[in-house]
Length: 102
Image (cartoon, rainbow, N blue to C red; front, side, top):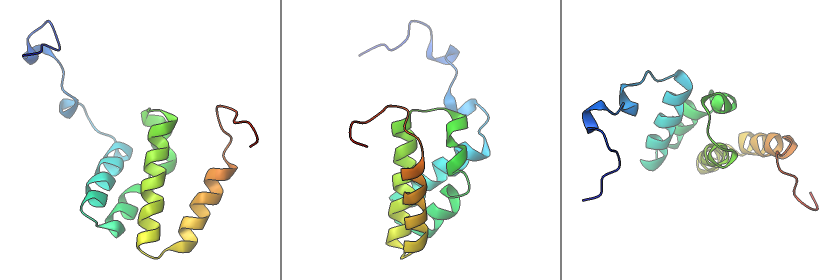
């Protein structure tokens, strides 16, 4: 057995005990909905909070994951205009790390 902490597991705070923000709830619900192929529910949960994800932390890669999830949901529901707008917004956003040739 591998021990991940030196104290008792009962003294380690659990994520599920912490209050969850509306943004975190939207991100969590969007993942569950996407996994269940409920793409309209994915959009309903994620689209309103996508721009707020930076406030709850996480890396740029994690933010990209949610953006790509929303993009896939738009495409799978035939909402091509919204998919295009999301892509245009993404391309226009300044990158934190310069990429050669871009």
